[in-house]
Length: 445
Image (cartoon, rainbow, N blue to C red; front, side, top):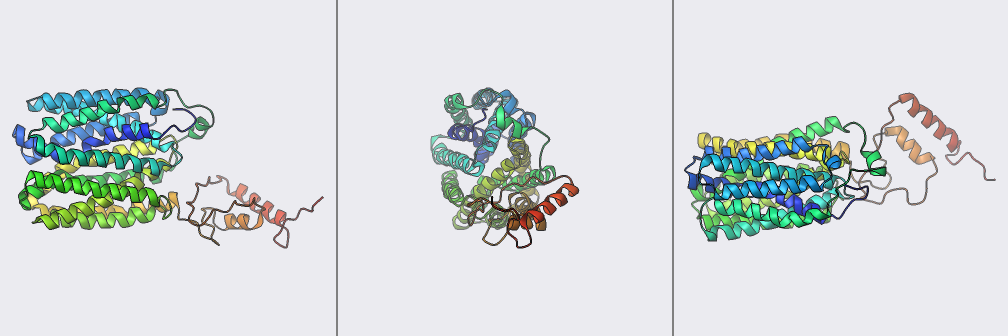
């Protein structure tokens, strides 16, 4: 990476290649069980192996992407994804499929880690992450419309993921290959910032993603078994749901930071919990399609804000990678959890459990968004962690015209002063400078 942020589209392309496998998880798990004779729980374990391997790549690369340069790990990840998923596509035995899946999953995780680190260095991380989710949703939606008409078996979806990895390869030429230097490196140096907020966010994203993908991993079986729909109809519902997700992500990109991050994350998670309950209890096309479409409309919106929030915690992208890897662990546990809950308690009870878990993590993630992202600034308010001293400084010191943010501008990060005595000296100095009438005590010469 260089000191200047590069074009976003190569990062979006790599992001798409890395995320595609998790978006296609329902058809991967369903087709593995049908062709290789695996039970739902066993097929879910294969999907979990893919996602655990992906998460391990993220944990391995956290904080190392800028030293290695983005180009080399991105290319290595795409090669591993193409080779691994390609091998799984042509393999006919369970051990070889699992081996290919794990190699491909490590490649997907590597590509995702590179994209997450690059997104964190962008001037507008939320916009870039929204573009990435928009692209991967469109790609997955097109595949859900196409694959059911081209025959059964696990070969087609795995081959499609491998093909996307190969198609993205040329975009890596536009990624940085040098270690950071200059101002960017100076800002990036130092200990991992916002540790408590980052840990809370990572833990929340783990549980949040686990609940989402527990349902996503068995959604095809809910549609086919409980709602009595054909694979083609279920694929069409998924495509429509992902299409609605495109609209949701575009809306999130337009909204940007105007409403802050707390409202989209908190309110969106509540809507997701209700959608999970509705989809898991569906017994006909109408309720199944409503639940899936509503869920997939809001899910990528909240995810884009979570990714942007994690990216904003550290310019080096370490929290973006770590939180993304924690999310991958949750995604990995999802299919197994969904399969076990659905087999032991049934789909409706599974939905109630997952909906409750989703609601439980809404509060801490929203709190992190409030604490680190702030709320939009409005006229007459000073919303800074400095409290009263910050308000006094804002009111008394001379400032340049245009220094006050416009209505709706997102709060900027503020560096805390470590010494209370230093803060008191600064406030006393500001009071003396202001003079008794609130204006400047200095005379014009």
